[in-house]
Amino acid sequence: MTVGWADEPSYTGFKNGVQLLLKDTAGKPVTDLGDTLKVAVIFGTQKTGLQPLEPAFDPDTGLGTPGEYNASIIPTRPGNYTFRFVGSIHGQKIDESFTSSEKTFNPVEDPTAAEFPAKDPSTGELAAGISRLGPRIDAAQMAARDAGGGVAQSRMLAIAGIVLGAAGIIVGLQPRRR
Image (cartoon, rainbow, N blue to C red; front, side):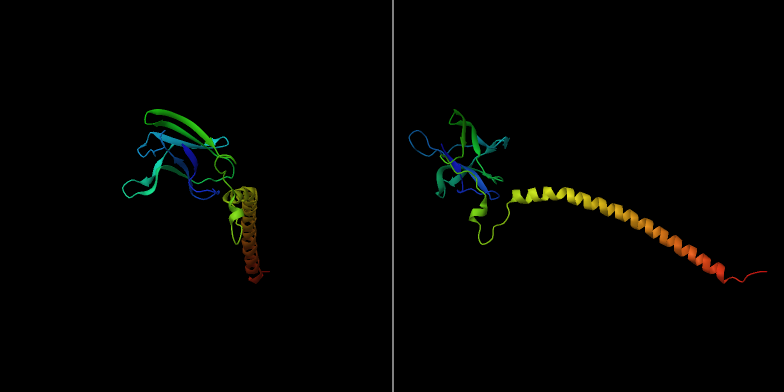
């Protein structure tokens, strides 16, 4: 089992996948895995459910690398990820984990180092910014509601003033009796 990212280096926010290159003890590619082996991706305390591994080769056309299997994922945070493979290969039970590091396969990186010409904020940075704006938005909405109530009250006072003024004019225009 040789494990890594389908695309390395791997960047946050970009489609990638768990890559498994599978060979038997004689070094021949295993091309008939079927659905007997699955993978879970782990980051810190979070993990995906078991995902199927799809062949990344076509034996009919000869395209791809025989024995290569992938499971698509979009990593959203930089750092080390663990791939845990569970199931069986030709009847042999498998429960193996592989963690990215400087000595195994590449950790996920923030894409800003590779961005050109401008360095855009990552999706994680955007999400954090939106979270920080939440209380400000709530306060502005509350102030708008309070101001809306004051506007309604002012409108009612203005209407009452117009009605009283009109009544005063009408009373003032009527002839006086002695």
